[in-house]
Image 1 (tube, rainbow, N blue to C red):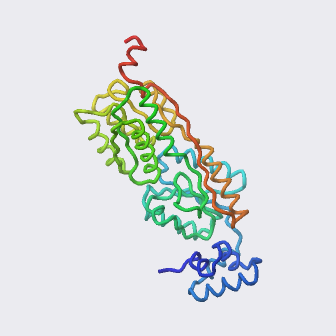
Image 2 (cartoon, rainbow, N blue to C red):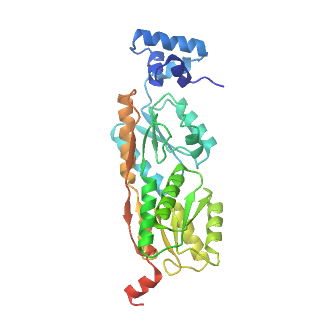
Image 3 (cartoon, one colour):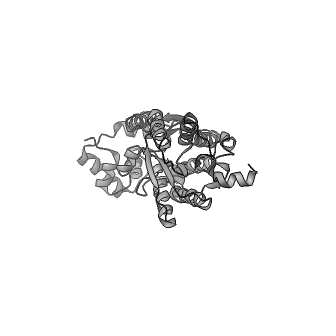
Length: 336
């Protein structure tokens, strides 16, 4: 197994940032420097390439690794990050993983080779499950998903609570049979599922949750099977904007309408959503704030490499629209 800079840090009893400073020839406490150099020798770590990179001028480039650039959430967050980076004279390399751990690993290695100044990463579920180990010599800030420890700075939505808000909203509008559709490939989907089921238990609802694959064809098939049942749910919660589109496509193919035949609510507030079924009820994520916060945290980390990891959790906003209204109530209020 390849020896990394974190292995050296563990043997020396110091932080990875301290190891990097020693290898770069920067001022470090002499006793600490000796421990690092001894650990390098005992582990067999070969620091030449890393040392040359750290001694050289940074590329003034930020690596941005997102899970799905086709998801408008990541598009909006990326734009906010790029705006802050450009104002600070930094360029951004955008990488799209499609929730594929192999692509993710390849891009992280590429960014390592490009001597990026830092990385903003939406990690795959598999990487988070490994304890968040990310072998890079540069600062990392996580967005949308958090590692289980406090090693990395991260900024994300209060996913569980916002899913609870959606269930409470649907319950208040008379819906009792609610199905939740959650992404199978991300920790975000798992957190929203947990909030969904917690709210349902509190309200005495017997709900169903379905893990939806990331690929378009598989997602459409799962959703079509759900909506084709003889006894459909009163309402469906979709855990992201892409999934909302897939639900609407399946409803169209079956000749069903929102909210006449089924209520619908979800996450993300894209421009088109106000025009469907009297408008889609959604949790609007603070996408610009997420992007700006992530970039600011990365810049702070560059200035203070030894500071403790920070976790920023932001609240979303419920935007209630016609899609979550019961059909019988809607008929009474509109005079139909």
